Image (cartoon, rainbow, N blue to C red):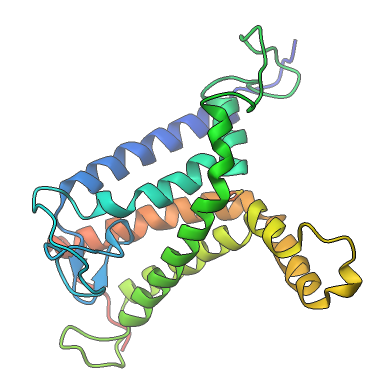
Length: 244
Ligand code: FES
């Protein structure tokens, strides 16, 4: 009986997420144009095989060259977003209409929550968080390496450096504001007074947690944009704007 445009939010969510999934899938399988000295696309970092373009991370093994290096690592960023408490709310509502909006009837007759297969698997979220935190450190490392120029000399900064840096910070804020992160630092305690350090961490993470949705969207856009920027440089479509 709602007469307002309650369908706009789920519709926009579907459009943005489908656009991101299509773009990310094309780029992950493309297996090219992900490195433009000194920048590496976040979709391909850490690049673990000997087939990698560039050398921002130690090569750990020799993989078949026809397998894109992105496929070895994208399972972790994909996993954290797929099992994220915020994204679950977003895609349960927008893709499964469960329910599509407050006070709007859903098409399903039965509700089983997340207690059965496959949704009970959402409980692995915290493990994806651990992996994401490691990748956050590596992406920050990539952003630091982007302060070198093409010859390896330090003291360079281009628009690409800024793009990688902003993206790495937003992704780190997304991970640190995670609900599981809040539980890890402050959960299972009866008395905060006996754990002043954990109380401090919990207070800081709780502040970030209040903006988790914003970090989720901002980091989704920033990671796609950072990849696209490196793609444009790697294909020679644009040249990097150099600050110093
Ligand atoms: Fe969203 Fe953990 S709740 S990343």
